[in-house]
Structures are given as structure tokens and as C-alpha cells.
Length: 246
Image (cartoon, rainbow, N blue to C red; front, side, top):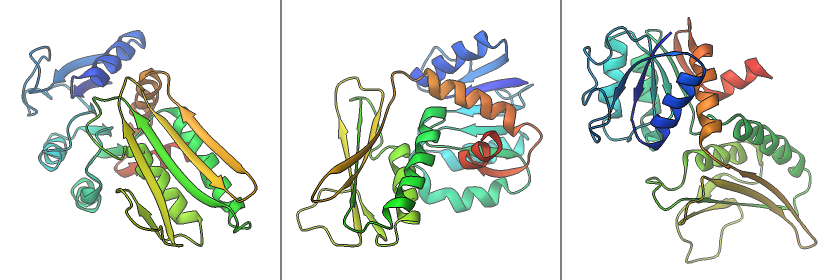
């Protein structure tokens, strides 16, 4: 498989290292914000000979990039976050033209964590005295807030908890409503990522937590997704991948 890395920042460089270790073929690195990449622009020239793109870039311009992938018949492993309002549009663009898999976090541990959170929420549905709380911590250079992973956890809790129908991500200057889950984001320091879900009662607290030690786990998961998307057409999520793996 011939790979293009789109977004040649910290994550892009870690993916490059993992590709070399796996002896996979890296054809191009594309990033208009650094002189270290092979190409500045995403186009037919920079994607020449490529069949799959791994993207960890800025959300700005994502619609244009997806159209370029489709025009050039390039499968996509999408790790860019912050474009969730465009999911339905992108599904229509991708349709059955290319294989496209998206996740806010490709770490296998995180995706196992998602399964644990979902099953836990189903259990706590039977014990209404327990209230859900969630928060996440990331390094000071992270550009989006809340994280893509936090968004995915919110979605799981909203889907599974019968008493909840809304996630509040902003600062609360009021009493939280009974149907709401508060999700908090904290930025600072050098933390790769910590996501915590609490189920709290007057008597005790059950805490579920995933702590990333590095970005290498995300790179490994992304490369597994490259292999998985091969030969597929349509829009997929990491859940589709995990359903096959588990």
C-alpha cells in the first residue's frame, strides 16, 4: 500500500516513524504549514502513486480535502478532529466512491474504553441514584476543546443513559438540569490525554479512566485502520473497525 501523510506535525511524524518500522510505503508527506513536508499542497501531484491518505490536520478546509481524495480515488484514514458538524455532508461526498474511516482517537485502548463506558452506562441505567460526570485533560498545544475523544464519550452516554438527553460542554453558571451531562475540558502542561467518566451517588463514586502515555498508540491504531479500509467503499467509523476486531 502506498501512503500519504496529510498533516506533518507531531502526529504525522509519529505515523511516519511507525510506517517505517512496519515497512509500509510512505510516498508523500503533505502540509502547507511546515517546510519539512515533501509537498505544500494536497492535489493530484502530491497524491500521485498513493492509494491511502492518513490525515491528522486542521479542520479548516476539510471539505475541499475530502473532495480531492474522492477525485483522486484515495482511501482515507481520518484522524482530524473538530469537523463534526460536517459529517452528513462528508458521508454524501464519500458515498460509495472511496473507503473513508473516521475516529477522534485511533488508540486501541481508547476504543476498548469506549466499550467499557457503553456497557457501564447500560448497567447504571438500572441505578438512578448514580449521576454521570465527565472531564478530560490535554496538553497546552491542543487546538480543539472538547477533544474528539470526549465528543465520542458524550455520544455514548447520551445514547445509553435513559435519563439524559443533552451534554453541556461550556462553563455552567447555573444549576445543571436533570437531563444534562456536564463535560469539562482542561488544557495545560504536556499531558497526552486523560479522559475520565464518573458515576457518582450520595454513597460512593465509580471512576472509569483512560490515560494515554504517548501518541504511538494512536499511530498503531491508524495503521491497522489503513489495512482494514483496503478494498472497502463508503463512510465508516472506528466502531465498524472494532466490531470486526472484537
